[in-house]
Structures are given as structure tokens and as C-alpha cells.
Length: 291
Image 1 (cartoon, one colour):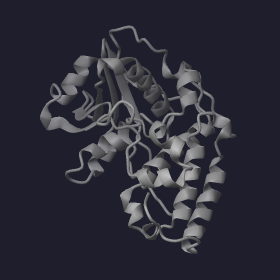
Image 2 (cartoon, rainbow, N blue to C red):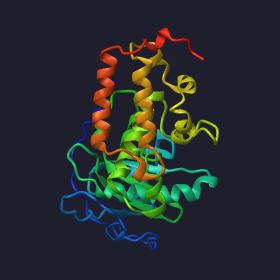
Image 3 (spheres, one colour):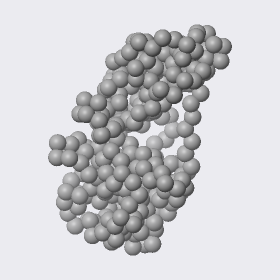
């Protein structure tokens, strides 16, 4: 079952660090405990710039509607211009009181992970702001400049909308491994399978997290038909290939990282799924009775 995601993001210039007036309640990114089990020599984390609330207000003209780009699950994104003249995307974290503790942790995780990324096709974290109760993430505006007209929420979903993809083990241990990537990949597979977002705060409390909502039914063919993207039911994909795809996704998002497949295994299984579907080894899904 061929699925694809393509991203085109521009590289950006590094900005100079700013002094922060409040004691930073997190340790600097370079001191956070991480684990990289890749064979390459680990790179030192890039030190992100720290900004104040006043600087965020100046950059966005007090968060004017003119600079508003879109709204995601955990905040609003604005176009901003730093004192250096650099144009950036600024995510203003907005969480209900009962989500405050969870959001605080996810904010730290986002700063952590984005500070570790260094690739020409990935958005770069310029800095962050933790001024009193205010939390902001400042990223390169490259993707926003490539955004199609009228698709404002695309910025939040791809630039800063990472909540919902984090490995449960990472949020409890602070260790990032190759299997954390497998978990995030599994969440993407679930999004493709169901046509839903990883996290949707517009749904009820028990239905907001996609993984928790569907993980237990992915290997039940009858229940699976109720959660897959309706577009798949009108396609030529076979139920056999869809079931195989769901099974792979379910194993990728298992709580225990040791129970997840490797990325190499994921590639082999996806190739098998494509082959299975191309040979039509079972009836097309639209020919099956939905229950």
C-alpha cells in the first residue's frame, strides 16, 4: 500500500542568544539526558536562543490578527520578526488548566527534540521563551513561506505540531532511541489509515489521542472497518493489505519499545503489503460487507 509524505523546508540562519530575566526552570538542552543508539559519533546539541515575553510581543505586534497563521491542538502560530530582522514562526502554547502539567512536559520535549535535529529538509528551532507562565517555540519560517494560500493550519501541523508522536518511554525516562522513531512512524501510519490527526482536542477526553483510541482494535478486522479512512473503502486497496498495514502500525506503537519492529522490518513489510495489494490476493474492500 503505497503511502508518501513529502516535506520541503528551507535552512535558516542562527540567531544570537538573548538573556532571560526569569530563572529557567529547565536545564539547558545540552545537559538533558538523551540516548542516541546510532553508530555515528553523536553530535553536540545546538544551543537554542532564549527570548522574553516582551520580545515575543514585539515580534508579533502584540499577537495581532494580521500575523496570525493558524491554530493547532496546543496553541496558536504567528508570523514574527525578531529584532535581528529574521522572520520566524512563533507558537504560543495555549492549554486548559487540566492540561497544564502535561503541556509543560511536552514543551520541554519539543525543545529537546527540535534542538537535536540538523537536516536541510527539516525545520530548525531558533529558540524558545519561558517567561512566567508563558511558553513559546520559535522556528524557521521557511515552511510557512511555501504554504499554499488558505492552508493556515498546515504550519502548526508540520512545523510545531509534534505532540502525540512521542514515545511513551521517552516521556517517562527522558531517553530517545531508534525505537522512538519507530513509534512516531507508527503514529503516522495510523493517521494515514484512519484519516485522523494524532491528537484532536475537538473530540471528547477519551478520544483525543489517536493511538489510545484505536490501538486495541487494529487487529480485529470487524472493528477495524469502523475506524479506517472512508476513502480507503472506496479505493482498490484490498482488505488483506489494509489489515497488514494496520497490524504493522499496531506493532510500531506498542508501549514497550522492545516489542516494536525495526525500521528495516517496517520497510520490508511495507514492500510486502504493496506486493500483496498489487496481486489482488483478496477481494477489494468495497466489495466486502461492512459490519
